[in-house]
Length: 222
Ligand SMILES: Nc1ncnc2c1ncn2[C@@H]1O[C@H](COP(=O)(O)OP(=O)(O)O)[C@@H](O)[C@H]1O
Ligand SMILES: [Mg+2]
Image (tube, rainbow, N blue to C red; front, top):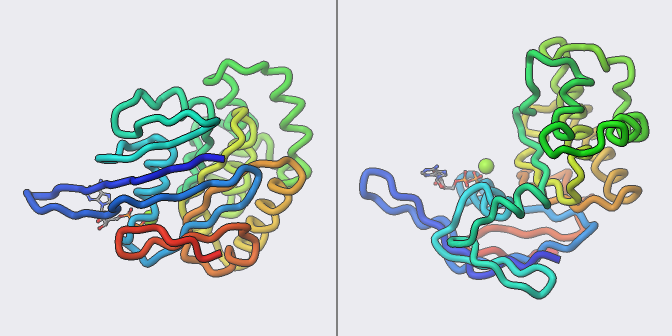
C-alpha cells in the first residue's frame, strides 16, 4: 500500500499561479487496478507524475511500509528506480532498435540478469501475442502493437507498479479492448499494481478503485 497525503502542487506561468492540487490525498492498493479520472486539465498527469516521483510537489508525503517520506524534499530517485514502470500514451519505443532489443533495454539499464529477462520475455509473450514481431522495428508496427510492446517492456524492469498516463489515448476501439484485457490478465495472473489515468469510461469496469480529481482534491468514488 502507498499512502500519498496532503499533496499540493502549483505551477507558475508568467507570474500567474495555477494551483492544481491542494492537500489532496490518495491511497494506492497493491495488486489492484487503480483508476484516476477527472476532466481534462484537472491534474491527472500531474498527480501521476508526482506519485511516480517524476516531479516534486510543493508539499506532500508518501508513506510506505510505515515509513513516511517527504515528496517535496527527499531524494526520490531511489523509489523511481525501485518501484515504478511507466506506460505512456506515445509508447516511447526507441526507433533504432527492434522489438526484442526494445524489450531488453530496461534490463540493461537496471542491470538485471539478462538470461532471466530472456526467459521472462518468452513467458510473458503469450499475454501480448507479439512473437511474430520480435525482429520488427517500431516504425512498422500499428499503434496497438506498439502499446503492447510498451506494456510487455514495462513488465520486464523488475518493478511491480505500472503507472499509465492515458494509455488508450492513441488507440482505436478494438485495440483499447485488447489493452484492457491485457491489463486485467497481468493484474490477476502476475499481481501487478496499476495506476491509470484516463477519461475512457471503459476502464471503470475493470478498476478495483476509482478516484476523481475535482476542485483540487481527490475523491474516492469506488
Ligand atoms: N509543466 C507545466 N507547467 C505549467 N503548467 C502546467 C504544466 N503541466 C501541467 N500544467 C497545468 O496544470 C493543469 C493540470 O494539467 P494536467 O496534470 O496535465 O491535467 P490532466 O492530465 O488532467 O489533463 C493544467 O492547467 C495545465 O495547463
Ligand atoms: Mg493528462
